Amino acid sequence: MKNSFFAAAGLSLTLLLAHPTMAQQGQHAGHKTASQTGGNALMKAMQSGMNKMMSMKMTGDPDHDFAMMLKMHHQSAVDMAELELKQGQNAQVKALASKIKSSNQKQIGELTQFMGSHKPQPASSMLGKEAMQIMHSGSHSMNGNIDHDFASMMAQHHQQGIDVAKAFLKEGKTEKMKTMARQVIQQQSKEVSELKKLENQVASR
Image (tube, rainbow, N blue to C red; front, side, top):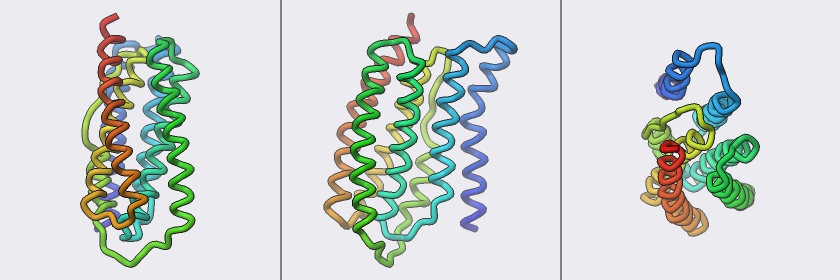
């Protein structure tokens, strides 16, 4: 049953992320620009991170499982930010991407240290299943402009991270991970507002 859930979740995620691409290809068949290619690469980075999260073996220890999922979620954000920094044109969007990359890399180091020192405790947390449902929430829009597409996709990505952090706080045990979850909620909530503002600004140009 568990494998069936994750298999269905993987198919649902693939269709969700592929849909805007298919629409875009229908409108611009045979005329891919660098920005469109960048947008596709962003989706692949986001999907890759999601797929790796879905393949993780949960221990039932909420703190360990949260750290494991958050580390992968952060790495996905880093990969997306690096694509924006390489191919983006908007200085404001690139500046925010640089900030996101830096903060996520710092927390990846902290999460790695925690996982190295924290032995998973026998428990029956449902955080993993709840997180997978959260990962299929929200939406983003794509118009072929990589700055716009990055802002839209990262806003969705951040909101999913916020929601997983909130879910973790309902059953987290260690102060280290509860502090991390609160930091994620505070920092990424602010960045979601900035990303949505930039998404609208870029789209209107």
